[in-house]
Image (cartoon, rainbow over all chains, first blue to last red):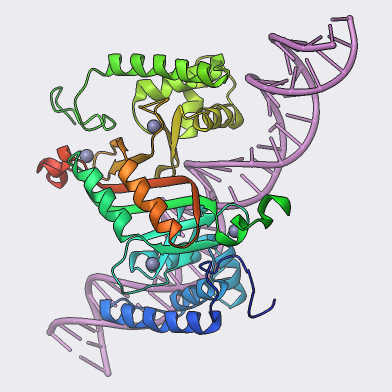
Length: 171
Length: 171
DNA sequence: CTAGACATGTTACTCTATCACATTTCTCTT
DNA sequence: AAGAGAAATGTGATAGAGTAACATGTCTAG
Ligand SMILES: [Zn+2]
Ligand SMILES: [Zn+2]
Ligand SMILES: [Zn+2]
Ligand SMILES: [Zn+2]
């Protein structure tokens, strides 16, 4: 698909890394986490997670559905939406509302408050650690007597690569 | 469904207030802000903002459209979307992605980083001050070399009224 | 009064998401 | 092993959200 070393295949968490290994490793951790929670990682669900991991980027439900259908699973929207919902509910994937898309969780099992950084130029999406952000959010909410249960924290901006000069010039 | 005193008319910023006054006052500030920015607050746009302010809650584009159509404006989606987009671009309204909805900004003009608190029981939506949250977000992003330009910070949980006991019991 | 910019109206369409129902597969109990 | 009930899947239909494209109108600058 592209050079293994510098592939800016959008999506990488901005940092270069051995993606094949990272995806495989993350899948293993996801499976462990699913087992720990007693959640059934059925074929469709597992395949859905694999698809997200392989792409290593945020994917629309219909894009995932196409892949699933190609693999012999159902080809109707609910097939993808149900699998994705399961993954999100079990902390194996996240929903990026700004993009109407889903992305595999890079830290399954670890209790975390993800922050999504979306590059407006190359569409890369990174899941950043947001413990501090979440803490600030909880505090701001508490000031109003509001108890936060779930949060979506998404930022649009420029990734380091795109900010590094070649951004608007290359458009 | 509710008593006059404790009416959880969804929407209030959790705190009781003279809404008619609050809406009127906010509209005045929004008009001033629009003028300051040289943005043309045309009839449709102004009416759209009024609709959002009167409802004092997050409204879907199509819901706004119905109101606009009833007032003699166009009745096709672009009419509402264009007006709403204008308001958002000019800081007079916000988009709440989790709800696929829009809400009038309660602090037009004041440079602010809004945090939306959405009650999962009564659907109330409050725009909380999120300067600290935004600061934490900027820091978390900076750690990855990412420059945040815009952010959506939305939390789902329980508002003080619904957390105060009568929540799931009254359903 | 003409050209251009901006705003609006309208048609049609795409993308996103959920409902409802039939069928199958798993699990737990007897 | 049998059978009830829960969970998961497949499928068709439909609702909801958002945009592209084009025509018309409006206002201003020259
Ligand atoms: Zn995660
Ligand atoms: Zn980028
Ligand atoms: Zn605001
Ligand atoms: Zn509430």
